[in-house]
Length: 359
Image (tube, rainbow, N blue to C red; front, side, top):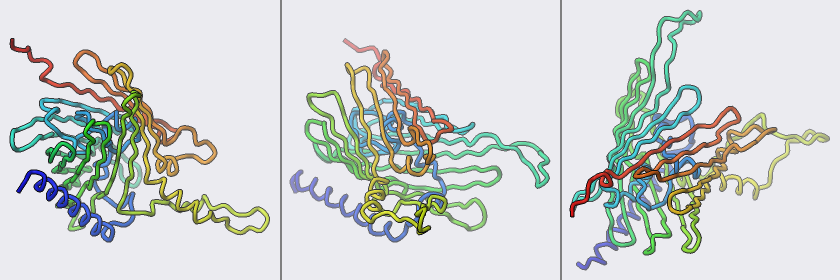
């Protein structure tokens, strides 16, 4: 069997795997939001991802902070890279990530990461409001990612996740995998990724035998960097497994002031609104290879979290990346609501840069 035939067979196998995942998930997973446990798995800590829309990025330029959400980009160029990230959400809720990559000959490249979400400190109180101490709540996931190049154009990868959640005296444990595949153009200016994430289940329930589902999702993304312009754009399509992402708000019903009849939008407007709820846009302008300016727009976030009479910049995000000495520093701010916006900070470096070169 030639190498080309081998690669083609592998590619067909990957496509069949994703097809099966899609078929079964379409029937098994319905509503999103509020129906799953371990929702923290969908939180992002990477400042770059947060700035460009807040989900994942189909960008293959050896950024280790992207590997935990897209394992198919893990490659030998990330060998000995270290990354840490921190995000402060609302109140005292915060999220963090630490990741390290290493490549082994014949096996592939690996990226191990630890992510956590801390909900902060709470007060014990009875029905009368009498307080009697405090407790903490948080969730943690240990991810072991693997990536491998099939040839010069295609790569595959997977994450194995061990999940632990502790909410006061209630504890839960689960396992999941992410499966991803990417196509990269020969000049590395164009990338397409397909990802099936959080394929797994809760193994130990918080209480009794009430096993809850975890937030499975199919996603596709692409990015394009222009040859003669220092700019890259990114487009994501989320929740491939579920078309209808709309939320019917009973307080948002509009009526005709004369007839009193309920006003309904056209079918075309409904389809357009539904389609846009799947889409996330991002852009990145690179200046002199040491400074990157980033921005993104998440339509679904804007529609679900905006205040009707004052939409402001809800759904928009921005940030920058800068190289200082041997470190890459990223910062982002993402507007979820008028009340405030989370801040994201990322620091990455390649430990090989600190070794003294031998003559």
